[in-house]
Figure 1 (cartoon, protein in one colour):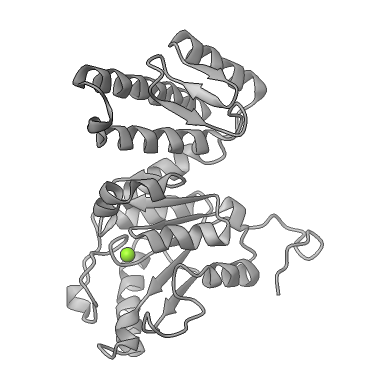
Figure 2: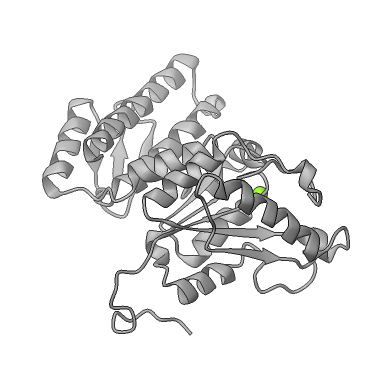
Length: 289
Ligand SMILES: [Mg+2]
């Protein structure tokens, strides 16, 4: 049962980072079953350590349909996880819990991503505040798992299947933050976390936007070239993480959509606008550190 009331949790609820395994922390080997084939990505251990040091609980959430398909057993997967845990423990990193969905994709499964079931279990069993937590993975199902659970942000890494996804499924990633790899995810998450800005800072941001030719009009933020706009329910007033993530997504999309522009010069100017806005946001984020 959910324990959301403050009465049952007098202490502050904990924040967590939920992590996919294959293609996110270790190389995706297509049905990994042998310890000798497990390869941690460079910088992954240190990235996890940074997140732990910042107070986040870490959880591994992995679909292992190779078990349901009969390619290997749960015992094989557990051996891999013992080995992974031992490797990470040398740097003081540990997962609160490792959640495994062993079922075949065609069979019913309570926990198989994009199901948010394991995140709900972590919420209930460890007192995790999902609205202040993050999901990191290399597939759309990872991001959807986070969204289905109501996490603060789902983050796509370009390792594993992530680069291909970022190239081909851009329209489905509008709400995601997209980064190169796990160290990049930790960097962004920590830099952008807790970045709700004050009214004074919001005023400063809008003045910076105006001086660069950007303006709000009703529900749209227009670039100086008017070709790039951002639709919001109201003039933006959320947190910087959200705004920065949206603008980075917009910028990345623009770099792959040259054909939507009448000429190269127009495309170049619009990208320049977007880069200018991202630069403004980056400076503001720096001041929040
Ligand atoms: Mg993966």
